[in-house]
Every structure is written in C-alpha cells, then in structure tokens.
Image (tube, helix red, strand yellow):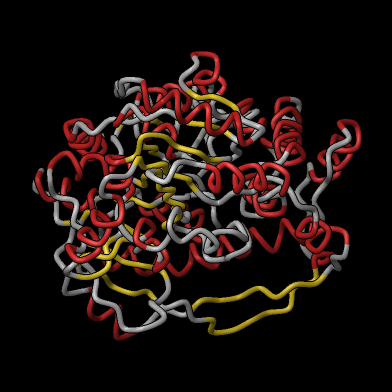
Length: 486
C-alpha cells in the first residue's frame, strides 16, 4: 500500500464521519441505500494507490453507460430443483481454487468450511460464479454459475432520479479536499450490483439454502448476493480472507446507518479475536451487522490433519529445503525499486544454507508485482512449488518472513511463532504497528538490516500467540449454529 492509498482511505473515512445525513439519504428511487456502491467505487478506483482508474472512471466519464442484464441457465435451474433444500451454500470464484491436491483443485478459503459444516449436520453445497477456463477436477463437487449477459441497455444518467444528497456529497468532498466520484461511476456500479441481485434472487429461490457464505463481500457480485439474501431472509456471511485492519474500507466505517446496509452481509466471521473486536467496534452504532469468531479455515484443517496436499509437490518441496534455513518472502512486493534492490542484495549475499521461498499471492494473476530477479538465483530462490502448496506447510518450515504487505506475518506469528521483517514503512504504520512496537516485527530499509533481522530470528525461540488467528474448530461450529438459530 502506498502513502497516497493510505491517505485517500483515511480521508474517505473522515468524510464519512461528517456525512451521516448524506449517507442516510443516499438512496435510489426504490429507497435502497446506494452508499455501499460509493464505497466500492473508492476501493476499486484507488485499489493500489494509482490514479489511472479514478481518472478513467470519473474525470473522463460521460453521462452514458450500459446496464447489463444477466441470464439464468434454464438447465441449471432445473438441476438445482433436485438438490435437497436447506443446504449450507458456499459461493466462490474459479480463481479461489489455488491449492493443487491429489484429488483435484482445492479452495483453501471455503472448502475447509464445508468440512466443518458437514460435521455439525449441515449439507454443504459449493458453487462458483463463472466457469473454469478449462475442464477442472475439484476436491469438492462444484457447480458453475455461468456469467452470461442476455441484454444491454444504454442508460443516460441525466434521466435518472439523482440521489437527493449527491450534491451535498460533492460539496462535502470539496470542503474536505477529497476526490469526488462522477455520478455515472456510482450508478454504473449500483446497476452492476442490481444485475447480480436479480440473477441470484432466482438461483437462491430455487436452492433455498439455510445460509450463504462468501468472501470479499465488497465486490458488486457479492453485494448483489447479500441483497438477494436479505430479500429472501437468508443469513449471509462474509468470511475473512485477509487483513481487515484500519483503513481497509471493507471493514472500517466512518459512519454506518442505524439499520446497517442491506447490500452488505449481516454476519461477519473472523479469523480470531482481534479482528472480531475491531468489527464489533465498527458495528457498535447499528443493529443489523454482527461479527463472530470463526477461525482461519486452512489453519483449522491443518491442525485437524484434513488439509489436502499433492504428495508429489510435498516431496519435491521437502527435497528443495532439506538442510536449509527457510526464509519466506510473501508477494506481492509493491514497494519502490530501491528497497527491492536491497532485498536482492540480501539474497545474493545470504549464506549458502539459506533458501528464499518467494510465494506468490494466491489471487494475484498478474506478473506486475513479482520482482525482476526472481529467476536470477536458482540456487537460493524457489517460487514455483511454494506457491502451489498450502501456506501452512510453508510456514511450518519457515524461520522468518519478509514482506511489504501480506496477512502471512500475522498468520505466521499467531500459529507458528514466526517473526517478520517489513520492508514497507506504511505496512508498519497501518497494519503491524502493535507488532513493531512489541519488537516481534522489525522494519528494514537496507540489505544489512534485512540480513540482521533474519539472523536474530534464527537464534530466537518461536512462540505462537493465537491472537489474530485461531485453529480451534469449535469457534466455527458455534458461529454456524448461532446463525442457524438466530
């Protein structure tokens, strides 16, 4: 995360704190609050601290956009009518199937939840929105919901009923020197949410699940699913997938209406106590949304011995790290080239018995944030196998973590007692301020500081904290039962 990205998010949260009346009345003509669409626009337009998306979506925008209608699949709907009602429905995406196993692709975000749901007598049903790019065997049976556009309608924003507080919002942005969104951008996002709402309203009416579990609720797809769940009185759960600390706009709110947002899930399951307490504070002034501890799904499966691996990959991994001191570098690395050059120097000058596992982010599909030197030190860097096995297996063998921005340090510290070097000042100020103050995470700006931090960790005893993540399956069982009985 860049300094600019941090400032934009903090600026927006400050704007929200002064915009309660604006937010409460930011509705479409049906009375649905559109503010979650505003929040989604800011998250997307400033996702990685660049202004190109913001410029494209707001400053070069005109008053027209295409409203899409998504088509259901009649054969699929007929097939879904034969499924037993009351399933625990887990909705994911093809890109979530990041773990290769002997028995097909495994979704480390949702598959472990399906196993726990089965243990308490629920019938898990997995679907994905979209289709796999090629025929794919999955560890658990998965139904594909095709994304098919049936028609497009050209919309003129000037002919729509403007949210009554939009002008006040724009004026407040000027007062706070905060970038305002073009009305076309907001309406386009809102209609995208609506199109997914209309699609999943039909599928959910057919499936009749007892609950819906998803991750990354704040994309238009999941905002639409949450709205459909609210309409049908189906409990909807957002399960934690990564860092939720301040100022992440998905999990931090400057203001929330007393009755919450219908396009945001009612329930939030977190990895551990610290995240649950944070959301509890964020939700304190409203009566709709609730947070519960669920535990980290892959940690639960790992400790239960049910997390599957590919035996061939594991054997190759063990051979690669045999007799080595393992350093895990969690990608992506978003920093400037100066610190990356220092990291490269640290790798090149490190002892021969060190191996650096450069693990790619499981959802990162672009090579943009992968260091240029990743293939230059084959004897010291491994990045292929470690990116295809579970993070738990990687962390079990790791003696130290190096990263700019990743959830891995907290996972590593909580479950395995592994300490971390942060090569980003921003990460230390935003996400890991407490750990830096405690001395368990250290900042490094030079190759000497990186190497020194690692050497210190190699001499220290690893003590898991269980603060940010828990592997106790009883938390998830209890949370699921509470949702069922609510």
